[in-house]
Image 1 (tube, one colour):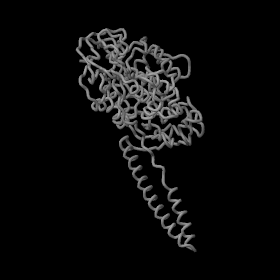
Image 2 (cartoon, rainbow, N blue to C red; image 1 turned 90 degrees about the vertical axis):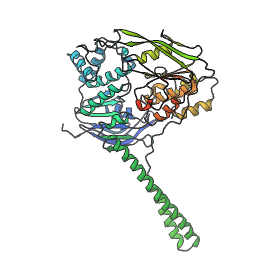
Image 3 (cartoon, one colour; image 1 turned 30 degrees about the vertical axis):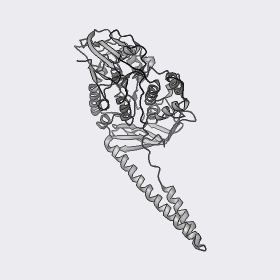
Image 4 (tube, rainbow, N blue to C red; image 1 turned 120 degrees about the vertical axis):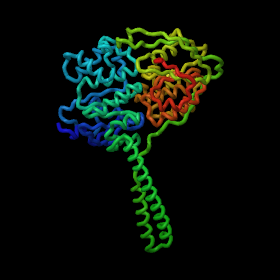
Length: 503
């Protein structure tokens, strides 16, 4: 197969989840060998669905998807499936290698595992790799993100599909991934909301419009494509404005001539027909992604005095063995006291124990932290495990609402997070990861917490929403602990104190 040939082609592909949830409408595009393509679109537009159609776990309702003969495709999902979290590293990689090679036995898997772990920067330390018997669940969110990429790499595919690969990664992890993709010489299609990351390697963009359910294909790097889209919208708006003005003028003249009677009535009729053609000629301007409404997270009423005290933390020691699950935890004494309207940033690299500490604080199981009595905890987990995936969105929101449920207010808050009437009765598990994140924020608004704990709240979220979320967190008046590896996001939030676990 030659470099630059078309290896994936969608030909008028339509797809819907049931009769009331159309996703794609006669979508056509192609991907050439060696290209690095970004898929853009609003949360829930269907970006991940396109990946599932490419790997043929979903079938189109109409149209055809053409893949080059013998094309081998590997996908790195947004999150590790829950039923794989209790696998060992070896079993985890064996399952992906089997799927790729198409037979039940995989030979010489251990050297292959070590090789891909090196590529994703879960490196050997003093000659030791991550132990192959270690359980996947014991890795941090950032380390699991690297394992997801490694699970795709071990398949040695022609096409790599990466779904939100920067989620949970620290600065070092993102830098390493960026370098890998720049040097990667095969075809790669990426879904991400990280503009700087995308611009470093993108050759073109497939824009999935939520409103028209069409794909627009653009060539160039990410920032150039954004300019092209803006220029196209401006041009289409100008053309529509001109056509609308001319149509109005034609109608006014038609009305004038119609009143004169006689032959002028025929002229008036033709002018009305011309005006109608001008109106019909106006193009559907691509609508920008909708952003969530500005919101506030109300703090629990009656907060007095100290809300949270942290006197000690446990961090993972950096040593010869990578196996932090069996390795030594180092206890550090700290002096953190959070009262009302105090914001704490918890920092440190992937794997040092940030999420573990947050979970322990939220559950009340950590000895070195004490939460004042009767304080409501709003906990945003990076894996959304605080959500019951079997609940409908509506029931999930009702379950955390403080006081009597005000139906109108609840639905208004939901709508502000783009949870529309066609989504609110869906099960949480059927939503995209980005939509689950918006549901989690809506729950926090309804919950009115006294202590807000946020673990990577930018994961999966459309970048257009992030300034609005940052503004809400900045103005939150309860006590707050934040973990985020996105400096631009953190810079928009008032931080009163930082606890660096790596210090």
